[in-house]
Amino acid sequence: MKLLKYILVLVVIGVVIFFVMRNKTAENVITEVPQPTPYTVDPLNMSYNISGEVFTLKNGIAEKDTAIDTDTKNSLVVFGSPVYGDLDGDKDQDAAVWLVNDPGGTGKFFYGALVINNGTSAKATEVMFLGDRIAPQTLEIHDGRAVYNFAERKASDPMTAEPSVGRSIWVNYDAKTGQIGEWVKDFEGEADPSKMTLGMKTWEWVSTTYNDGKKIVPKDPERFQLTFKSDGTFSASTDCNGVGGKYVVKGKSITFSEMMSTLMFCEGSQENDFRKGFEQAGSYFFTSKGELVFNLKFDSGSVIFR
Image 1 (spheres, one colour):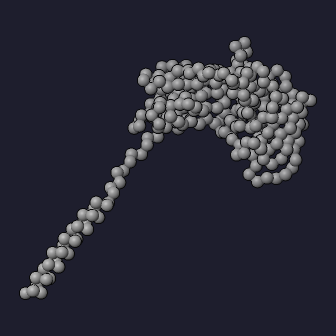
Image 2 (tube, helix red, strand yellow; image 1 turned 135 degrees about the horizontal axis):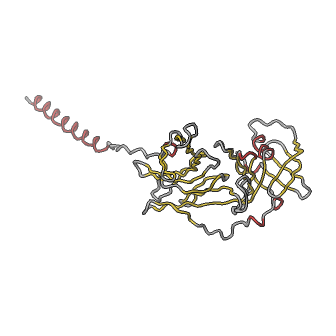
Image 3 (tube, helix red, strand yellow; image 1 turned 135 degrees about the vertical axis):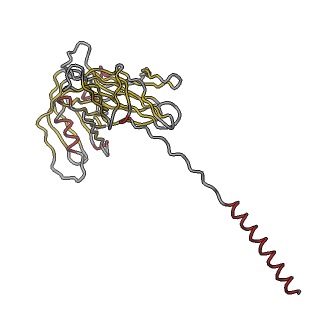
């Protein structure tokens, strides 16, 4: 009888210990609450309104028949690559894009547009007209604003002239109204392009951008240097060989010739990409950011030095 009571007591103690330990284990289990995946904007598949006509892009392009000729297309294309950053102050990723409208005539009209991320969806803003047949350089986001850098013609130049005047437009998004507008930056202390010269410094390669959207950025910019001498010669250093030759300036046009270099082979070198900037250069200009820009021949792209 005593043995039976002893066994029952042990059973009761075991049951109590089981439930106590189970409850403690349950208390220590941390339930992970799934976090929602951040919404990603897709500027290449978005609708944009150009002068009252809506273009719905698919993979960065939209085409429509023109009213006059069905064989001629009215197209809207994303130029280059969108850039991403916070443009409305809510700390998520919005986007800015270059848009090129070719209505089938002689002009190509460039616009800027922002795509605002609302957390679960995105909407394109109105577009801002930037110019006809300008030469886009870069698109950046600084201080919550999209910065469009490009070259345009002087007011007195014909449309056949190459763009030669550098300009930057800062586009600001007003979260209260949903509108965009140009923000005038305080340029105090920035460079004066009218006082800049080719020989004023040694220039460092920043990037090369082609009009098909391809962009080349040096892996080690400090190794790509360009120096102009007053005797009409230039010298350059690369990540492999040294380069030298002659250059001729007429107005804002520039031509490089008689280029020679050492003949070392360096695997993975970007020297050829760097040299193409000289070989294909057609004109140049300076920007208020203190940059030297080469416009490539046939309006095929641009090279930026700083």
